[in-house]
Structure formats: C-alpha cells, structure tokens
Length: 564
Image (cartoon, rainbow, N blue to C red; front, side):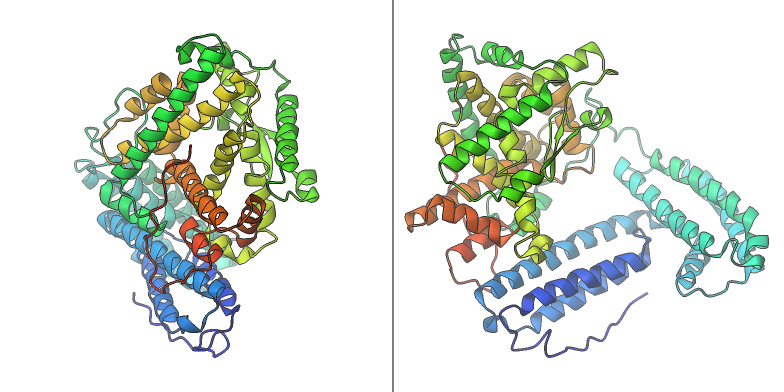
C-alpha cells in the first residue's frame, strides 16, 4: 500500500521566515509525528509499517527542504543540520530493515485477511465473526503446510531466521491485540472466535519457535566462545560513522587506538615499577585486583570514591555541579542476571553496583570482586555520576531538552571518558595502585575500538576478542566473555557503541584544546557543553566556536587523535 500525504504548510511552523527558536517546534513535531505513527502501526515487521514509515521520512525530507535555512539563527542552523541528519539516518536504517524483511516476508503470505482484520480493528469495525472464524481456521492449516514446505529449505543465516520469526511475532502481537479488543465485548465474536483463536495462537507460537532455529547450522560458526554475532562489514561501518560526522575510516580508528594502547601499556609498566614489580605489569595488575573489599562493603567504597572525586573537581573549579544533582543521585545493586552481560557497575540517574550474590559460584564471586576492586572503580565512579552520566542526565533535563532527539554515545560516553583523561592529566590518582586502576580502564577503551572494529570488519572472531581482553588488557576471563557477548550477541550495544567512548573522548579533548587556545577557561567550556545538550561533537564544535554552519554539513572535522 502506498500512502500519499498532503502537507498543509502552516506559516508559523514551516515557512520561509522561521524565527530563531522555530526549529524547536519543528523538532517536537517530528518526534510527535513519529511517535503517533509508531503507536498506530504496531506491527513493526509488516509491509504496512515499512511503507508508512518510509513515506513519513520522505515527507520530512520535503518539509526540511521547504525551510529557509539562511534565515535561521546559529542555534536554528545547528538544529536543522541535526534534524536532517537524524531523518536521513533513520530512513537509512529503515530501508536496510525493509530489505531484510522482504527476503523473508513469504513466511506470512497466508495472512492477508488476518492483516485486514487487524487494520479494521483500529476503528472498531464490527467483523463478520462467522467468516472470520473460518479465516483463522484456514490460517492454522496454512501454517502447518508452510512448516512442512520450509523444513527442507533452511535459511542461509541465523539472522534471516531471526527476522522471519520476528515477522510472525509481529503478526501474532497484532492478532492478540485485535482479538482482545472484541472478546467478551462482542457476544457474537466471543461465541465464534474463542476456539479458532486459541488454535491459531498456539500454532503461531510453534511457528515462531520453528523459524528461530530454521537456518543452516553451517552458518553458526561457533569459534568455541559460544558467542554468535554477525559482522556488519566495512561499508556499513563507514556509513554509520558518517552519520556521527566522523570522517575517519575504521582502519584509521584502529591505528589510533593501537597508538593509545601502547601509551597505556608503557604507563602501566611505570606504575608496576612504582609498586615494586619491575616491568611485570601483569603481576602488578593481579595485586591490584586483590585489593577488593569484603562482601557488603562495596557501597561504602563507592561512596568514598565519589566524595573524593567531587571534592577534587570542585577544589579546582573545573565545572559547576548543582547541589541538587549531588543530593539526588541514587544507588542500587545489579541483579545476578544483569551481571552476566555487564560485570561492572553502571550509572546514570543512579549507580548500579555489580558485586557477588549468595547464589554465585565461588569462582564467579572472586571474579566479580576482583573485577570491581576499589582501584578499578577509582576512575569510573565519576564516569557514572558527576561530572559524568548523572550530571549529563541532570543537565539535559534542564537545558534545551528538545535535543534529546540527537543523542549519541559519542556525546554520552565520550564526555564521561573525556573526564578520565582530564583527571589523569591533573594527577587525580594518589597511589600507583590507583594509577593502575585508571590505566586498566583507559587501555580497555582502546581495546574496545581494536576488537570491536576488527570483529565488525570480519578480521577477528569473538574468541580472539576475548583472548585479547584477557592477555593484553588483564581482564578476568568471565568478565572478558561478558564484555564480548554484550558487544556482539545482544541488542544492548549497537556496532559503534564500544568505540564511542574513546573516540568521543578524543573529540571532546580536541575541542577543549581549540577553545582554551581561544581564551576559554576549562569551567566555561565544561559548563557550556552541559547547557547545549546532546549532539554529535562536530556540530557542538561549530556552535561553541560560532563558526558558519553549512546546510549540507558532513563529516569534515578531522580532530586531533593525540591526548596524552
């Protein structure tokens, strides 16, 4: 189905004479329109959804062309470029997903009348229940026949099988929603439909399970790690980097990470010497791991590190941390299930502490405690709280919150990592053990770029990634495995997420250097960043430096990759 939407271009919202703040309303309208469509077309894996959202993005491309870019203020121009980039990025991802959908859409080619029932339900059209019961009955039979046909034709890849199953799940969800709308409220529907729906409901469940496993096992290349992912390839990586306004190739980013990795390793050897282990950084690291606190004492250790970091930052007047932000952050304990994919504590509005629970094996308890010792936690408490993620969330809610739409891990994680760099340069660690803790995480961020990009390029296997984290960074094996699993075999992290820490930190550090050369103070820079809200750092740079913002700005800023 094709949708043709006629837009009434209202002079106060989309016109040739937009005022300085009118892009805010445009951005709100975009987000509201997108939300409205996604709330209406809830079967995300359907022809209807892809075509309707595809039309939505085309219409918004036209809307943006109708704006007189030159009439906008500096903020307005930045917001225009950000919105245009967001529309294009989401349209690109939708087109990729739609292509994947088309490859497996035949799994639901028996369901035309079912889709029609779901669509009519949206306006409460009363169905012909007797006829609909037969439609459901025929669909149940059709699934049995399709299953028999497909049994001898497995999909080439597990991703295709997963996509096929998601098509059926999407249909299943739509049917459940439509059925529950009428059941018990419409007597005739209730009488005719109960048994046919229950039979189809079970058949769809079985069909989903069948499809999820219906792929050539030759494609499942388990290298021994048990982690099965799918590299996206160089072309997709470059495209994704362009949407982040980053002009570097994956190979250039790997070389940058390797250079910083070597610097970190040299500093770890220096710290090992200070600790009395000579050049044996591994033995020094093992000593640091054994500085863990007893069970039940981790929250106290976190609080002590938090108080030290805030005091250190405020004594040097590096950034404004509002009293309310310091008053209102929270603390929770991470569940054992969550620790399987995230062995270290996380943060944001609250800090989530990863530490052993009674049900863990003795070996897992030791790995958790050793991996979360106070020296390893030393640089990451401020990363998760202030001036890292907690302050970011706090300030985002109070300053230009409409820019929430332009969030990127290069801003969110890059900012927190940037502070680890700054604090190291200001002699934040008090002991060689604390230095080793800071360096462990810094080299880990370098390793994330190296192993994630090499994997996505098809150069490394998951096991090689694990081995690198264990042998070259010093991770406990279980923690390294969890890190790699989170990177490639879950939906938790998109392909660029792992490299966003260090590369985003590099961007902030390079921008800081440019502004300090122009007479800014560190506090001015840090406070201004917090007041501009989320966006790719390249666009933030144009705003802070008050530079001309081209309408078709792309990935041009080749920021410095040196930050010792």
